[in-house]
Length: 264
Image (cartoon, rainbow, N blue to C red; front, top):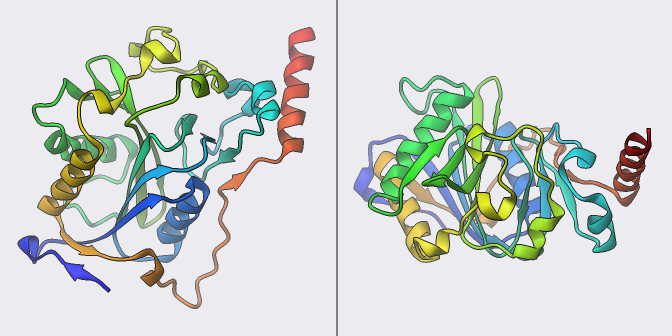
């Protein structure tokens, strides 16, 4: 069953899906399917994912980005997603917000990474108005000089996706699975993970953030709230997700190559 929010009728239509605790692999498969097989515009909000999971960008190399031995020892799932961006570890403390849009949805918006990023920051400025010192720094959402939101994108011929992992809270011990990347934003200043990131819970409640995001999206678009089960894919659409779990064998091979390089 769908419901049109009437306060912005006449504006471009945005389908809104609110989820709770959907596994991140399932969410990423859904996003990729909607990007590649749908011609509609979508906003997906997923409040947490049950099992801690490492998620890497499409070009990420495990040996450079994660501590492979602890990951293997603790059976930590590692996903390579279909979009670019950095490596994150997500869990129940992560809130995910995704926009999947046609290139002509927003008048004047050039379909390139930086303009899309700037547009998203304008929308989140409405959510965080008067809260902390919110800004977009390089490719991150920050309060002051501490990151709380990491972004990734993919741009196709006619559509684009922009998705964010918001750290409402995090488990300190899980950060030990991540290496400090060789390519890091300048404002990081070589800080370790715990000195670089912050928790949204120190600034805003989960419900206020989700409600605020929904309100901000509704101020730009006519929202069509829909359920996951009601999403239909064209019968002639061929789709095989590229987002996948890395196998134990792949991680072991990456660990072996890492050992060989360090002993060379």
